[in-house]
Length: 230
Image 1 (cartoon, rainbow, N blue to C red):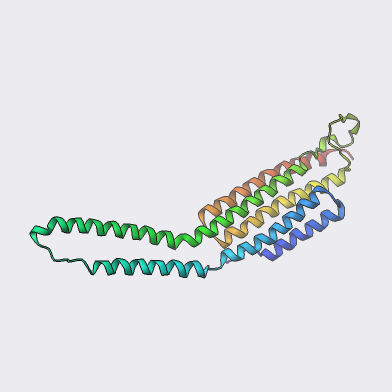
Image 2 (cartoon, rainbow, N blue to C red):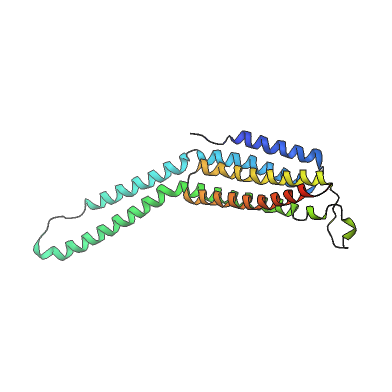
């Protein structure tokens, strides 16, 4: 089965962080990429934990299920199953109570059997939300990087953002943001391939759609920048 290599993805993020540091040292993008790198390392560990069976939860669940089944069977041994005409009503009442117990036992078994996946799902969703936040933070950093005002500093107002990048520097900055967006969706896939749960996979797809949408905004800026005069 083909899967993303988490180590290579983390190494790619590390290289991206170094590239940003080389060209834009002490910048906000460098800091957020550093946070992203640490989050990717944590995600890798979480995905590995999620992909492994939780023996404690499984053994505990199976033990409780076994005790419950033994308890129900043991209680049935005390029931007088002989049917007499004058005890038919009592038998029907007993049968109804037994069916209710079986239904409740089945619900309890389902709850215990799925508890491991629900615990893992909860952890995955919490971490996936952190990746979603990182994507929005990176988008905030490129928000004021407007390629249409390159070389037009004389038109700035007192509250205009400081624009000190050259055309080439702005191109590299936007390109780094686009790469980071792509890598965020790749890190999110760690959870989908470790826990192919419907809710987790849907959340991963939502993050991919989010990063693709934000990348399109960056790509549009790069297209404008490429058409601009040096």
